[in-house]
Image: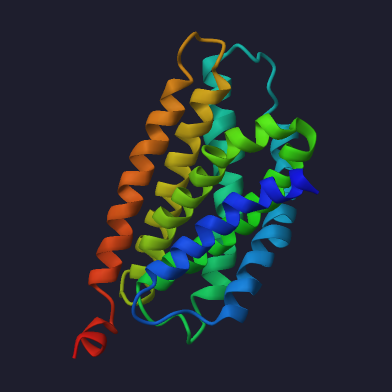
Length: 228
């Protein structure tokens, strides 16, 4: 039970943080919960199906090949996982009436991402124990949050733009880019010291995420109503 709590706790902390950063018009709790469980279940199922095919068509034949690990990180893992989240935000969240300001893209993308991260984290932590729980609480879980924020920033802009396709694709691309970079440096840990690149990419992602949150807060459709 303690391991389960440790696996879920960092996910909940991030959700609460993102929720309270929504300063002007909070999202319906029911819709947020639905998004979380879609990420926790449907997103995982989509990824599993994609892994089934990519595992056959893009196999790892040399685990010490930097090029194969690059393909694995960006096109097998990152693209599959971020696409699975993107599909839910695009077809479930974006059409909703409650999605009525740019920041909502961040809220829903993070909820879906945290659903995915929660399921993934539980599996890793129950297998790896307390050390894994502590490590992932400060690395993998925040990383999934940053991927969600970066994706959601552009998907939030897309909802209110005539260039919806381009902005949605920009969100997906940025999430895949940072996810792929994070995983790539971890996958090539056979090169001494290279894993530090994962933490550098995470720090950059966090910095950009904070800027994305602040920008959408400033651009909120409801800010003028709150200030008046």
